[in-house]
Length: 241
Image 1 (cartoon, rainbow, N blue to C red):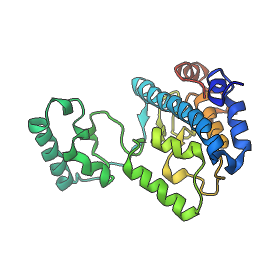
Image 2: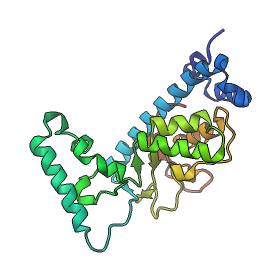
Image 3: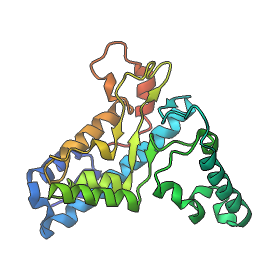
């Protein structure tokens, strides 16, 4: 008999997740967990690829991602702190940090303190409102949610944040989201359903699948005059879940 993961890769996406979900908390039993984890990893690997492609495609289309509002007056102490750290990395960080100075330990405090980097330093990169990568701080937040609720998060929910991160495609575009009123793909720590069952997380995966089916803009579902051509183009870049 084919494994869940083999069937999933063969295209039985919803069927496999439904079977896993039907086991409830039993999905965590050793006899099932290894097989389930393989499907979860494959699903989230595809989800991460899709998110990366959507960010790239939308940026290329001139999509304006929603960010934290810039302060009326620059935060000069913060900007000096960032500039000094960037200068240090440029002079002493070594070649391995030339492409991405933000990964140098001298700038680790930016993530640790959850700093919203001013736009002039990001050089077009996404702000924290749109994307936060997986990491120790995020894992700690997941642990705290599980401690508060007294039960583990669904496998898919935890794996999303451990593999993909925090994501929001909220923003504006003349065709895709003129006034920002169309709901977009959004999966952040603040959005976690703390009452969700501790099973596989098929409902969560179904919602993500729906969002990708609409090119990252599930809010167009049921609306008149959806930009079908643009949505189809985005959808064609994405992997099935």
